[in-house]
Amino acid sequence: MLTFILKRLGLAVLVAFTVSFISFSLLFLAGDPAAALAGETASGEDIESLRKLYGFDRPMLVQYGDWLFSAIQGDFGESYYFRLPVASLIAERLSVTMTLGVCGISFALLTAVPLGVAAAIRPNSIIDRVALFLSVAGQAMPSFWFGLILIVIFAIQLGWLPPSGASSPVHFIMPTIVLGYYAMPAIMRLTRAGMLDVLSSDYIRTARAKGAPEGRVLFRHALRNAIIPVVSLAAVQMGFMLGGSIVVESIFALHGAGYLAWESIARNDLPTVQALILVFSMFYIVFTFLADVLNAWLDPRMRSS
Amino acid sequence: MEKPLLSVRNLTIDIPVGGGTLHAVRGIDFDLNRGETLCIVGESGSGKSLTSLAVMGLLGKTIRRTADRMDFDGTDLTRANPRTMRKLRGARMSMIFQEPMTSLNPAYTIGDQLTEALLLHKPVGREAARARAVELLEKVGITAAESRLSQYPHQLSGGLRQRVMIAMALMCEPELIIADEPTTALDVTIQAQILRLLYDLGREMNMAMILITHDLGVVARVADKVAVMYAGELVETGPAADVFNTPSHPYTRGLLRCIPLPGKTERGSTLGTIPGIVPSLVGDIEGCAFRTRCPYAEAACRSEIPRQGSAGHAFRCIHEDGKRQAEEATA
Ligand SMILES: Nc1ncnc2c1ncn2[C@@H]1O[C@H](COP(=O)(O)OP(=O)(O)OP(=O)(O)O)[C@@H](O)[C@H]1O
Ligand SMILES: [Mg+2]
Image (cartoon, rainbow over all chains, first blue to last red; front, side, top):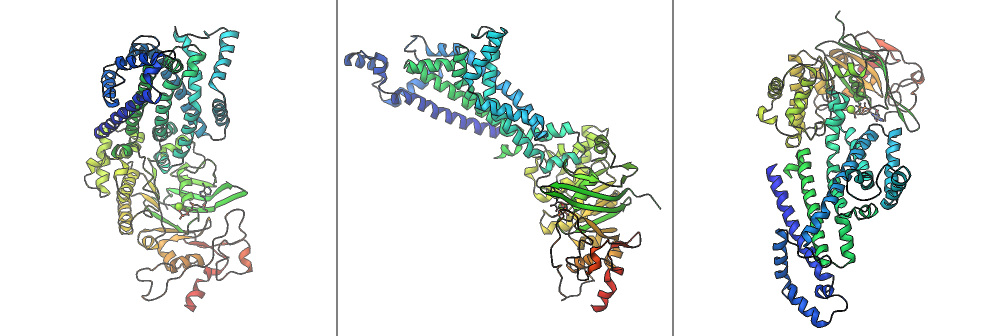
């Protein structure tokens, strides 16, 4: 198990470096960074002096090393727009995004897994149909539309929940539901399919032949095996939620990192965009790594491969 | 006479399939005494596995099982509720399946899976259960038993897994053990070895055993009783010696001609096969199911088939002694 973890960790670090290089290169792919910085009205001279000031005239690899070295220490430079350190800017927004992401994935898992299990136990039953309906609806309904519907009902008509903002836990209820519901259908279908598959397997029959009670058969013997692919999916969804919650953050005016990314792209605020891409990618890498470790714990066959 | 441990009367298993009902098992009767070995033989698809799963109460939800009687040591299995069945399974009756490669849970150690039944059914502690597991692993011929407990199924070969399955079935010293072709998935060289082992352990613990196998050579060596199944029916049952010496149903004789038996098959003689195919099990079969392949079939075979012979050695055929003597006379 330990060698497995170390191997995966090594791989994760390697991927992290690659990703960092790519996100660094984005700066150059996006055009001349000095020109972007100087603005549209700047003269050639201004651009040249800015190029010198920010060190854009040095070889790219040197710049990368320099940037990476600072980034590791938590220094992502200064935002072109806010004129503030990017690191503190992101840190402030990230807490909102993280809260939303964790709540969203928890909501998705807590609804999708039990529903998927229940649907698999009784295929074609009422509960299976309800689950299927919920999942199709979840897939078909755009997040912004669902979010607006919730706001209209619960914030405007009933007045139970605040429509926007992030100042208290109550503010996170609707965004959590919208974000979680987006991830739910895939998780539910994977759980259902996995459970159906596992429940018809020979080792479940063996467990029953031993006289194991049904609950033990379902959860200890079946779910443990059926959940393995779900873990990987949830990790990807979680990474996606952190980076991709822009829509939800905008509807509910939660000023999180997703929203910041969107703003910064619109403003051509390259250091911020760069840092956000790096941070989001790191989340993906960390979650994938954690999912791998969790899967190896669940599935002994993975440890040896 | 002692009361049989397991007594089955008119067991019927129906499976709804697209466009009808598949009558997989059509009213079979058998008795099994304590410590006795019953071998069920018959072609693929004749209903052997379903019969054993029916006894264990492990048929799928869509499969219908009815019986006039299914009595296990005084418990009526046809009426037993799930809780009662659960208490019997693994504790007093257990089963070894056909597929050793997939019958163990990949997520748990051998030790966890071996001790599970014991911990579920008996008031023993972890340590005692592990000690028992080690003891049984040694009994089934696994070396370094102690260290196997912490291994996972994927780390074991097929032969080892099947030994583990056998040990697992024996953990609670059941009174009845059902082994459904326990060796078909294994290397021929170890098949006989495993069966021998299973049989010896059964004797040692005085367990009744239902052994399903295609290997009539094995049957000849281990069976007390033989039941021959064809298309969901028991065409002949009786003490092993009787069935082998005076096989009454033409199908039984056909089966016996398909295998070489030590001392019975002459060197150089040809082994037979039974031409033809099994009738469809969907819907009713008129008269004798074997008549389409039987050399002695006649018009009367379409009618109701009587049960002949004694209570001990019975067969279903319209011909007196199933034309055995006539056949032997011409041979
Ligand atoms: N779940 C099921 N659904 C539909 N048909 C089934 C099902 N299980 C068994 N059958 C059918 O019932 C018949 C008897 O099956 P069974 O498994 O008892 O045969 P068997 O005698 O054990 O054969 P084998 O020697 O190949 O193991 C077969 O025709 C089979 O196709
Ligand atoms: Mg079978």
